[in-house]
Image (cartoon, rainbow, N blue to C red; front, side, top):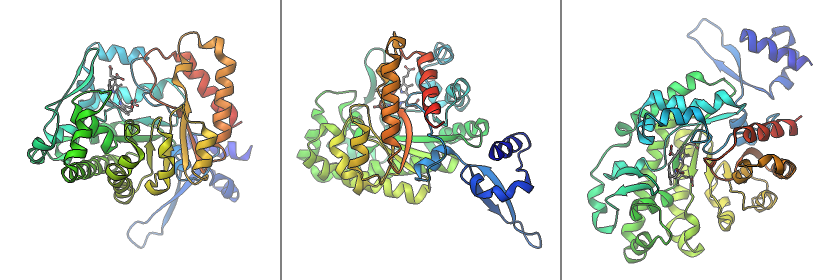
Length: 395
Ligand code: CP3
């Protein structure tokens, strides 16, 4: 009751009702204390800003509600997104700060979400290696020319990350101006191996022949490539954190195409380095999405992300146990349950949500999400239903 009063006053006036500060301990669960100093003789001023639930969960601080956002929450299932896409290509939207900020904010206006995710793509970064990116209808992304051991050295003479991606910084600043203080903005990039798969194959692939060929025939040059890609990704993520991203997410969707031995030898070193580097230089929590690859759970202790995101094929309880409750987990509802005649599966959907939330509550922290991006047929009312269920769980 008192806490609600304080919250209401804070929302309306931007200040906390000072006489109530004796309730500070409970308020501090909701708000972080921020101090700043002005040149003397003025005293140090102390103000209170609302805590971002997502950041707090990522740090294992157990906020008083489970933060929720969705992978691909901006996109084709939203009519307002389709309206913009009828006029501009996907890449035009990504590269225009005004349009990208608008699309990033569209789901925030519609739904009660704790975080926005920057509208961009994991395949923008290969441009700094001189590859051009296009999306062909029905075929997905195409990167050309494909990268291999012979043209790799030449690619290193290409563009600078900060110069090339200045527009992302502008998008982030625009979005941050519109978000509430308790909402976070997530920046992201692809993990080196996943991006390298697209760079070497030139498009989506089933067998990953080119990348495996490079890895096995010229291992030294391949490891150099992986580390260079990790370095460029670290600069790319630092740019996003400097512009205001509150957390950073790495998508590693394709690591499951390697045997554990090859993964350990060729992928783990650059990924481990990258996570540590980003945590050190950007100072914000790092989420690692490992998709359906639960075989990598034993390495999470070595990679040390702040948040581990898994897809729905992993049982959340098993993930929490395998990571010893030492990492915040993110996920992992099947997005396929939110399409078509989802209402006839309402009870099943509710049970799945409860099971995920119950398992997640035993982890160091839990961020509710889908286990992979929303599919275009996602029903908007199913999204609303899922959010309601998650809010109800926290009482
Ligand atoms: O989650 C978000 O809303 C943030 C933006 C975001 C996009 N892609 C926008 C996008 C993020 C985080 C991604 C990640 C991404 N992109 C991954 C990793 C996660 C995963 O899906 O495994 C990968 C592999 C890509 C590469 C990519 N981008 C592909 C294969 C495709 C075509 C297939 C598809 O889903 O359409 C894209 C296009 C893309 N990226 C769209 C969006 C909203 C669709 C654009 C459109 O048609 O309007």
